Structure formats: C-alpha cells, structure tokens
Image (cartoon, rainbow, N blue to C red; front, top):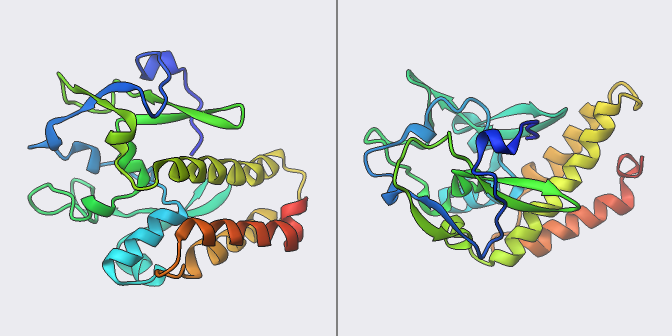
Length: 225
C-alpha cells in the first residue's frame, strides 16, 4: 500500500538496513494490543503470508476468506487483507486476552511494525514509525532480529520483488491508458496464480513463487503491456 507522506513527519528521519539497531523493542507487547485494533484494511497479505497461514492452520485460501481475511482494493489491484470485526474493531486472530493467536506465523506487516519500508531505486530501506506505537522507552534491537523470519535474505528479496511486480501494474492502472477492464483482469490473474492456487507445502515456497512469476511474465499478455 503506497503512502504519500513526509518521512520526517512519521519517523525519526533515518533509514535503516537489516543489520542496523533500531528502537523497536516493546517488551513482548505485554498488556497492549492497540496495534491489532482499528487498523481497517491496512494489513495487506502477500503470497507468503497466505501460504504460512494455510500451512499452520491446515486450511486453504477459500477457508481463510470465509472467516479470517477479506479482499480489498490496494492502489487499483484487489488483494487480501486481515479481517477486523467487533467493537472495538479487532484482528480476527486476536484472543480475548489481547494476545496474537498466530504470532509464530504472523503476516509480514505485523512482523515489521512499528517499522515501515521506504522503497527507492529498485530496493528499499526500513524506517521507524514514531507515532504508531504507544510504547515508550522501547529498547534497541537489530532489524533482522525484530522481523524474525527464516531465510531473511531470501525474504527481503521476495518482499522487494513482489512490491515492484505489483507496482508495475498499479502504475499502469493509475495511468488510465489501459482497456476498461484491465484492473479487473490483473486482479483476477494475481489472485488466481499467487493466492488461490495452493503452493506445495513440501517444496520451497520461494522457488515456487518465482516459477509462477516467471511463467506469467512469459505467457500472460497483460504482463507485457
């Protein structure tokens, strides 16, 4: 989800790499679940997020859509995001005690918070949001340790490639020069190939992901426009 903001207004004004230390440590969020409430449709899920949810919950994409996630438009493209409900509006995976029920396999956006990503020059850097988390006296932690995900270098490459892959379509949609149903066709293509079609749980996710992306780039006319 693209945000057109001044970094100096929402962050400490610095950009970080995965090996930098940043004040993100929050004591395991003890007694606080504010970031899991009232977040509307902002927790957008990438293919790895959905793969992990399906794997650990023993379900498929259709099952998630029935109760746990929803579809929404993100800069012109339809993508899944975490579902919120109740009053106050809470993540569907937040327990009655205010704890995350899927912490071990939580989505990338949740792993990242209160950090954000600033994309530039075909890559990205991290920044620390200073107004999103109410915790004070946060401790320093290395970025890669904070995000806490296996195969970190491969994960960063995947996040970057997925962002720019989507952005290519989103830019074309925003340009308004494509056929009227271009956005719909792109959304269906992405949903069908990266979300609805299950990834083999016994094979490497990243190999499967890039195989699908390469195949689409070679065979799908929409990808060439």
